[in-house]
Amino acid sequence: MGDVRITGGFWAERQSVNAAASLAHIEHWLEREGWIRNFDLAAAGGDLAAERRGREFSDSEIYKFLEALAWEIGRGGDERLEARFRAIVARVAAAQEPDGYLNTKFGRPGQAPRWSDLEWGHEIYCVGHLLQAAVARARTRPGADDGLLEVARRAAGNICDTFGPEGIDGVCGHPGIETALVELARVTEDDRYLAQAALFVDRRGHGRLSDVEYGREYFQDELPVRAATVLRGHAVRANYLAAGAVDVAVEQKDASLLDAVRNQWANAVTRRTYITGGQGSRHQDEAFGGDWMLPPDRAYSETCAGIGSVMVAWRLLLADGDPRYADLIERTLFNVVSTSPSADGRSFFYANTLHRRELGTLPDGDRPSLRAAASLRAPWFEVSCCPTNVARTLASLTAYVATADDEGLQLHQYAPGAVRHRRADGRELCVVVETDYPRDGEIRVRIDSDDEHPWALSLRVPGWAARGATLTVDGRREPVAPGVVTERRVWRRGDEVVLSLPMAPRFTYPDPRIDAVRGCVAVERGPVVFALESVDVPGVEAVDELRVDTGQPPRLVDGRVTVRLRHVRAHEHDWPYRADPAETTPAPGAPLDDVPLVEYHAWANRGPSTMRVWLATR
Image (cartoon, rainbow, N blue to C red; front, side, top):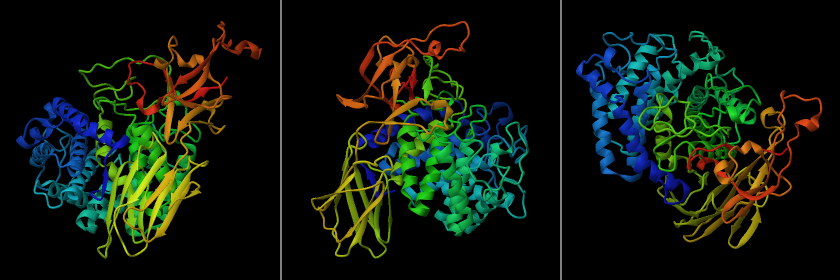
């Protein structure tokens, strides 16, 4: 991660808010709700059965917070964050038992025994996030003496001893340990962790978990990973399992396992993913719906599912180099991950609806909200997986920007900054990126190193840029198609490559098999999805009363994307079904020209409103 710096623009602004506001906000709530204190009680031999606070998985929020701190310390070197990090690590480490077991919900007097609720207990899942925190620390501060890596290795050793080939023949109800074990194996070069991750992947899908009201599909335990053809069940669980399976496949060179996840990803993206990149259309089980079941007003689209989707796509991108994976990462980062936090970084969406019919209600800022009940961003939730997940993702964002290999550098995401890579032979490659993307479509890449040998610079041309993208090298401007464009040559310091992407706003039409949005259009500009919000239409409270005129393309007016609308009035009847279609056609009103839309990620920052992404045309 130290090889990439983001120095300005959209993502630098988000990272700055995350560092300056979100991290302190999250720590405040973790302390206030007593979730960190649980470790103090465990270390002191307190009565955890009576005094422990939070859900069964609350330990994981402390670990995700530590991971966010580790990435942020690596990014900025803040000594105050370093002190906070070390203080919390010490409290966590003090609660670890001699055999490496670490959990505040199970195993102590008055509590359920260890490993007694693999379906819902989240014990193994929590260890996974502990390992991820330690991996982040090892990568950003190798050799640090805070002790977190040793705590993680002892916890991982306990998992291997307990669930290895001669141990409990089980899996966790919530995947996540799989990718964490592989990452720890990469950091420590201990293949025992990799073997355990592979064992967990292979055990999944054979009915080892008890059946539940949602079916074993909820846990991805009804079909082996290799036999499944699409991501299904609980959307976060499905993505975390897929990410771990890719990690195992890559490390063990398991082509059939990698093919299985590729196929699952492709089918989920083409049939079960919202225009924002969000995944999960069922509220009751936070799960994927069936193919084409993508109702905007019932979109669950959990923030954590979006982050899980980014994790899967990134791993597939590293494995294959296919730019489609980077396209989905971009879409999801701009329209799910960045939508969750408020502009000030102190409140969050847990679920991300694409259509709000009624004015939202301001949540009580002094108490946690129910996870999906918040109609506006809430400062904290009874299940607060999303704030910590957003924090760790934003802090580690540079990891998704670029890759390097023996051929040269590949840029996958665009932000102002610099990318530096030292090759195995000691030669250094460096580029500086200047852009105001996605506000502007020009990406200027300047070479900032000298090399006598040729190397390849590759740039992703997004899938949405099918018309009008160009690449300029040495004053020659050529059209380029979506995919990857590569220039291989002897580069000199000061050489420039300019990728120009078409940024005119555009209407996007849905597949007709998506029943819920038939007869609607969305508006996009670059990778950003837009929404109609009632605060931008004076005198209109319900945006459902508006129809978009597709005869006039969306356009930029004073820096904002605008559309032409008509305000219509529905006929009132004593029965909503009529024999005469004319009786169901709303009465047309006067056109409204140049009505501004808001970037979907920015909606609900100006008070209660109604909103929709898919705009009705009739």
